[in-house]
Amino acid sequence: MDVKGFVDISFVDWDGKISSVIFISCCNFRCPFCHNVNLVLNPEKLDTTPFEYIEDQLKKQKGWTDGVCITGGEPTLQSSLPELCSRIKKMGFLVKLDTNGTNPTLLKELMDKKLVDYIAIDIKAPLTTEKYSKATGVNVEKMLENVKESIRLLLESSMDYEFRTTVVPTIHDLEDIKQICRSLKGCRKYVLQKFDVSIGKTVIDPDFMTKSLSEEEMQKFLTAAQEVIPNAKRR
Image (cartoon, rainbow, N blue to C red; front, side):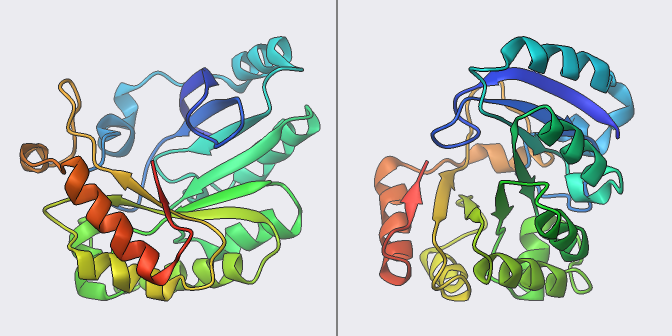
């Protein structure tokens, strides 16, 4: 498992829980608004974090850290992900997985074997090839059905999950958010996230850093989402 980053303590990556965060390299998307540029495009430039180091840190935090978030990149590209989850679970920690949903087969394996406790799937755009390709920077024609299957898996499951969308003003409009919500109707948790254009941030396509959403605009997106999913929230 190619771990390219580790945060020992986070209060923001898992709602209601104190967690550590593991960053896995590589991704099959090239979302132009992605902040994890080197993790996606140049993972060889980043130092690899040995699991033994992570294990030592987690042992020190036992009793006051609830779980571990595994994010990326796209973790489900790694065939050794179940082993990583298993090792963390055996240490007594909960496991949260962040994913783009393009590997429902591995997702189902993790769920069936109870190797994850919480799954967050990023829904990038309405589920059409044109819109999803624009949001992800790649041709998703062959991957979109996988995303839909991952959505179905979670909607039909009893496990804890969330769907989430990062709202990007140059990609999404109000109708896009409504379309996304219609495809997720009946879900237990949907969250909107505001695209971060803070000074010092970098993204795959710098042009996307030129426009930000005001609080008023973000509220309009949330209102649009709540027309379809009444309990939709924002971060």
